[in-house]
Length: 332
Image (cartoon, rainbow, N blue to C red; front, side):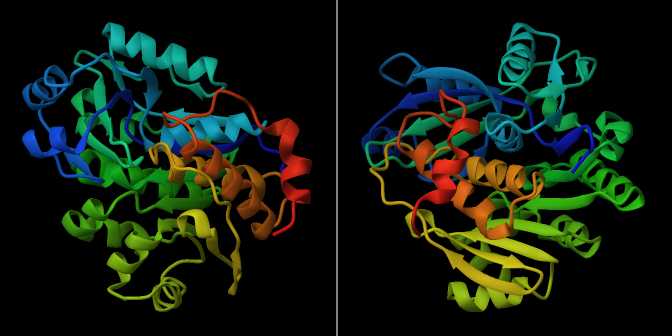
């Protein structure tokens, strides 16, 4: 495609701070394992103070931000619509995002605290996220860049945005502008928490027209109230244009204009599951906006997700555009 950006993403701007902890810590601090929990600033500070050890790393993050970074990592062009504070963390966030090759509106800032996600990683590679949204909770339609949407191939909406009224308004504005300018709309379900607690705004966005939906196996089953991947996928096909359901190391189920196939994944040692779905979405979006079929895009995405879970942190420390031919040439 020939537009300025492959993908315009909107979502929460969060500085990711990763720690290694054990299961005893999670029990002691009453942290729900494997999910995302919204917390206030005092609770987040108490959690970090109780960790024995220094942070593993600090990066610009948020689910959709990680996805835009992976689009860039494959050589694509991406833009992230977000909101940060005028504090040091906001400076860090925007600079780190830029260094990762993702453009953003440097004026989308305000007086307040930049959001932070405390990522707690246990020895089994599972991540438990405790998020203080800070100023990103006020991300709204005024932060949506309509000119950028018109110059993008796909608008990507982070499901986590639907946890606030202003975020819902932003998602609907981006969706409406995309439809008006012939731009495709992609949505990620993000987390079972969003499906359970914010079902109504989620349904509103889905009914507004979604060309591509991302979900993992658990999210697909939860949303459709089905007990198998096959029946969940059949139900999703009646709601959205196309969908991708990730199956971890087993790969993904991909719908392409009603044609459904499974694309095999990769068996790797899981170190940290944080960011796997985000990386998958970014690689897939890169693929479909750069002339690759949905199946080949899924091969790129399965590889990217496997690479991310094989290390600590939600992002890779290398770019992947030079590996595309090798990835697509590998047997499935």
